Image (cartoon, rainbow, N blue to C red; front, top):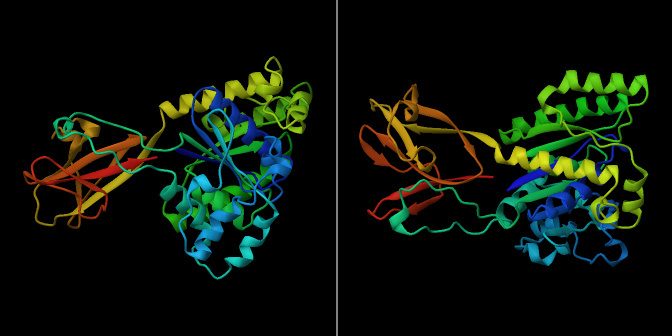
Length: 363
């Protein structure tokens, strides 16, 4: 499951338009998508035609459930608004939640905690006969969670950034937009120190019009600054996009022949291509001070003990970094020919020989 937050603390960058239309385009490709409206103004909610008919159960309930100490099921707050597309709407009550959680030291991590605990099914138990076959399988309720964040650097934006494993940063053709990016990048560095993990970040040129020399120079500047982190797709300025939002429709519903529809379809295809190559780095380590050799084997290397699977030793601890695509993997350490599960990992399943396999879940 890819959790993508659309963020730039500068207003007017088109975050909500991107959130709505990227979600809609991904859903049209057959991907299951959940859009979480985290802006108290509820623009994404209105932009999908929900507006005044939004229920009392909104994204506010995610945070309220932690205050009340109760488990909140995603089915209580989501609305199915299109085929393959569900929405967690927003409302003005969301604007009060920061004060209600002011004494909670972990308040900025609550949305991420909710997503990780409530949007995944239980681990699937594979038949014993297939235990050592290379297997990767996905257990998420949604392929994509898109979060529309507010246009500020407050509590809700921190939650949106903390929850994400990817950030899309809209860039309008203004140097103020670039300044907003620098501030956002500093926020991500602060969060990285706290969660010991930093989401990937990509930049999207939005509301582009390259007819002027200024615009052409701006695009060139963005390409030089962000390089491969800049989406190849550029979202062009379009009256049809504004009309679609006013009508409570995605651009692909409103006018499939428009430039905006073409741009968002191309953006969705680019996001999907990234998904196929989406790789995370994960560090594994085990304490074995007296061991001579330690390997890690699992679904990701066909359970083969070879030089590529060996760990490095530093001060009695052995470690390695795996690069894995999304999915679920089983693995074990091989410590001087003894096969052992990872005692530091609480996720495990029984193997057919009376032992235990450790589990890795890459989202």
